[in-house]
Length: 88
Image (tube, rainbow, N blue to C red; front, side):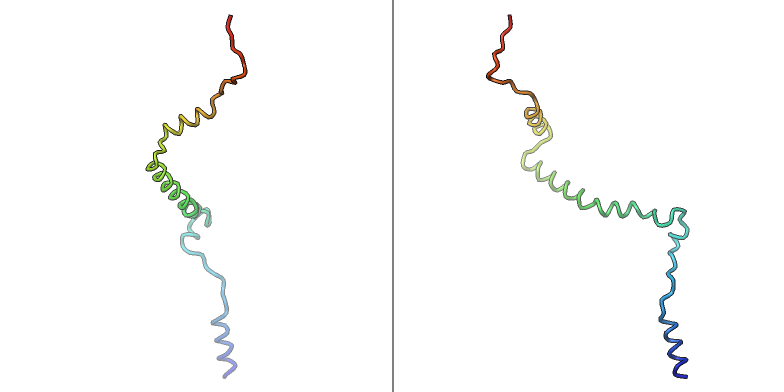
């Protein structure tokens, strides 16, 4: 009797195969439908950080037209002062 109870208890506590949820079973793509939520959770901190940095930069006076002007001045070719330019 005691052995039968022990066997029944072990059978009840033994792990069984897991069943998929209704969404995974009904989906034709398996669990690939969960790609967008994971992507959103991964990218959310970067989006929030860039928004906060953008607000701080705007408050500090970094405007898009000022940054574009500085970048254009840095990239544009500067004349060499040692080159003599004459036109005849």
